[in-house]
Image 1 (cartoon, rainbow, N blue to C red):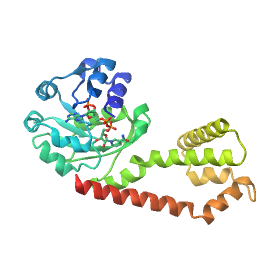
Image 2: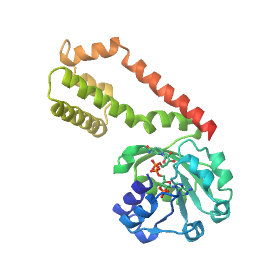
Image 3: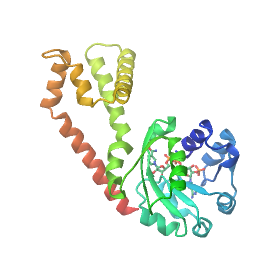
Image 4: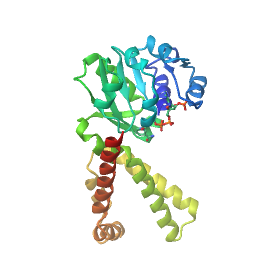
Length: 257
Ligand SMILES: NC(=O)c1ccc[n+]([C@@H]2O[C@H](COP(=O)([O-])OP(=O)(O)OC[C@H]3O[C@@H](n4cnc5c(N)ncnc54)[C@H](OP(=O)(O)O)[C@@H]3O)[C@@H](O)[C@H]2O)c1
């Protein structure tokens, strides 16, 4: 995720590599990122944070506990942007008590190719200049929408976990294609491109998904036959239950962290 942000910022000319620095834990991910992108690999948190204005926290939620105590002082008056899943603003405020503001962000994996959607919420009302800085950062990962923190578990369930539902649907469509007689690679290609094309059409047309669905559905036709089966098996109820389960698990995990 950190790599996606860094590459996005550099590709969009929002920040030069010299203006970005990173630090990691015990694995060489951060060092590799610095080597591959030309950003600076800091040797200490003092070096990393000293001259920085915006700090992006992109370690795993459980690694936040490993941050040295000095980080609390070092981040005084800085803008903190945390993408650590499930870490609430009140928890982040204990780790970064002197920050000028803290923003909690829930991105999703298409962020890796700049096609993500992030939900975000600030600890305190965000200044215009910090909002601009934040949106620059988030743009590197795709689109972003401001939400209430109380909605973060629902955002996690819809867009955070959402790509997995879509991948599962793509796999199911591929399997069904094979079942009705297509060669495996043809079924995989048809499933992938159908998802991609339908998603693009949905985004570009600005129409409701139901409108687009109805346009490919003639009475008693092939699509109608398929949709009848989806309705009989309560496809929408299934998705509702899946999203509710993800939302409930997100609440449980946030309480644990
Ligand atoms: N992937 C998603 O779909 C998704 C969606 C929403 C939110 N998130 C959140 O995004 C964050 C990053 O996820 P990811 O998939 O990118 O994880 P990741 O690939 O494991 O990256 C974690 C990074 O944290 C660094 N790190 C570990 N311990 C550290 C420490 N003590 N101090 C500073 N840096 C440390 C690691 O550096 P080294 O490897 O160099 O040690 C690594 O670069 C997580 O908090 C996750 O909850 C992810």
